[in-house]
Image 1 (cartoon, helix red, strand yellow):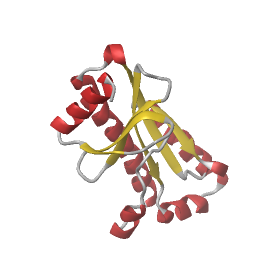
Image 2 (cartoon, one colour; image 1 turned 90 degrees about the horizontal axis):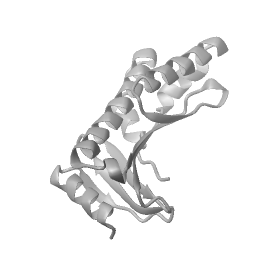
Image 3 (cartoon, helix red, strand yellow; image 1 turned 180 degrees about the vertical axis):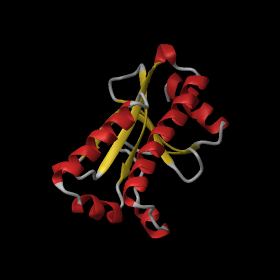
Image 4 (tube, one colour; image 1 turned 120 degrees about the vertical axis):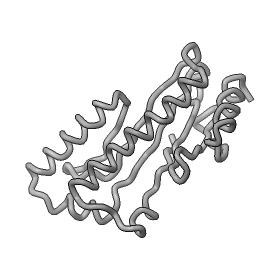
Length: 162
């Protein structure tokens, strides 16, 4: 276990965020965390990037919302994707959208911290920032296409396995 891995795991555990370490051949370490309770984010250190950690999460759009997006005319689908891009870009996070034919299927939000900037404060602040950006995306979808029911919320997968 590296110095960074020990430090990051301890800080996440101290704050009650640490859930588990998962096996991942593409990383030096990969932690699943809860923040806030019931919401899953990932903290990873990619292979061959010993001075870097990435905090991120992936969110799938619910089947209910997907069907509503598919019903939109093409110009409104495109406008929604552009609005979604601007929303996430305004959160000052890195993101990727999966949107074949302008139908938003999922989005991934990440931020990097390099070793020379790694502190407990920066780590926890970044975890909170990633969650807030995810929440902004979810709220945008819910406002435009309606709130999900409990069954749809349980279908949503929030793990990012890089």
